[in-house]
Amino acid sequence: MPGMSSKARVRLLGAATTIERVVRLLPIAALWLAPVSATAADAARDPAEGLWWGTAGSVREKVEVGLNITRGADGKLTLRLTQPISNYFDVDPGGEVKRDGDRVVHEGLALSLRLDGERLSGTYPGPNSAATFARAKRLPVEQPPPALSQGPAPRWETRLGGQAYASPVVADGVAYIGTTGGVVNAIDTRDGKSLWTFSAGAPIFASVALAADAVYAVADNGVLYRLDRSDGKQRWRYALGDGDVARVLPHPLVYDWDWQGAQPLVFGDTVYVGAGDGGFHAVAADSGQRRWRFDTRGAIRNAAAVADDRLYVASTDHFVYALDRASGRELWRNDTGAALDAVPVVHDGRVLVGNRGAGLLSLDAASGETKWRLYFWGSWVESTPVVRDGVIYIGSSDLRRVSAIDPADGHVLWRSDVYGWTWGTPLVTDKYLYVGAARGTPYFVRHAASFSVLDRKTGRHVARRPLADTGGHQWGIAGSPVLAGDTVVVATIAGSLLGFPLLP
Image: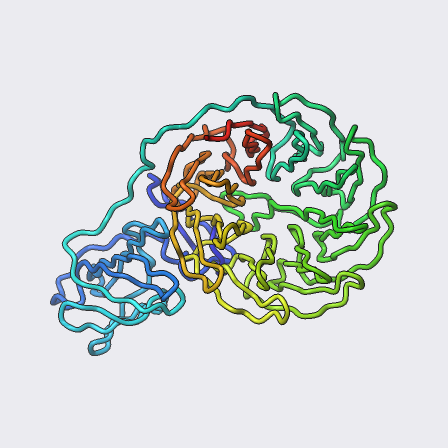
């Protein structure tokens, strides 16, 4: 996704024509992205000038960074940045490199280094990561995605009406998914044939929720529907009251990027669901009657999590809330510092959640205290984590990486570049991770849409199937792959449901 600090200007890299864009909520790291040409000045060469290559980070993760410090035509020192983990290669953040004795400082990057002969050391954004650099003869350049086996072709493809940002939900050989065309679809995962449809009459961005005999779906007309799982007939409807809340989809020049929806959560005899006006509702599953409502100060655009007698709710108002499940009473709240639209995940007494402030956080489930926070190098974290066998697996956004992380302390085990936005949750099997990725153009980071298979232990690519440009600003896969027997089901933004064979 785009970054996070307000009113920052970026110009698309690699384009023949520069497009100026006002970026809402752009993180400091994304300010690196405005190319500015520079030529050598006639002033005396500063000992800080030249190419530098080194590492920055913390005990959780260290990354490689390159600096190219030169003097511009105006006599000022400028810096061009190469940071492969963030997909930045020879870009100029603008601003000036300041010198004060042996200090080398770039305020816009929160960069503060000490020059000692052939060495630079100090702090670097990450935030304030320890960094060391040595002289270099050259810096790396961007490489295209590698040529790999595409893996098996899909067994079937079913074209749906409208776009599909939601993830399919599968049970008993049937995949259920809604689209922006306002229709809930039930699809046989053996052959892709439609079993039934329900027309809500308004776009559907959220994944549905299933119970034994029911499908629960939320549409942008502000209604929660209960449908019969066997035939899609409506049993009741509940007014969430957010039908007049505006939604701005991803756009090359507008960065609200409000493309997710509040998936219902069914637990016992109650349906719990958020809304675009910040309300969080508890609704009787059998009758559709309200039991209680809790109000946050921002849109709720994904599912809540439940553990024992508590609910954990993430809001775009920056807060994670712990609520009493029976009454909706607030137990604690944690200000994560940025909007949240990923699902909180409860694991081993912790609440794991990513936000649009470039971080994955681990909170104490009992108190809400932040136990650790892992920086994602300027990328939003909209992927919902999944934990299996003591490892967190999670996608990202502009980082393009799928990551394996130790849940105890946030230490990065590996990150694998899948070359596109990875907003969904990786599907984890015994041997592999199945990952969907999306692309958009024009955009200031190069992405590629694909369906990939990674080795679960190492992150190595096993197969990668590129997905064709279907027009519009974005294409590829926005949601999560899901398993249906020996078939992996994915939905494309263009509105197709695909069934791929599971690898042996």
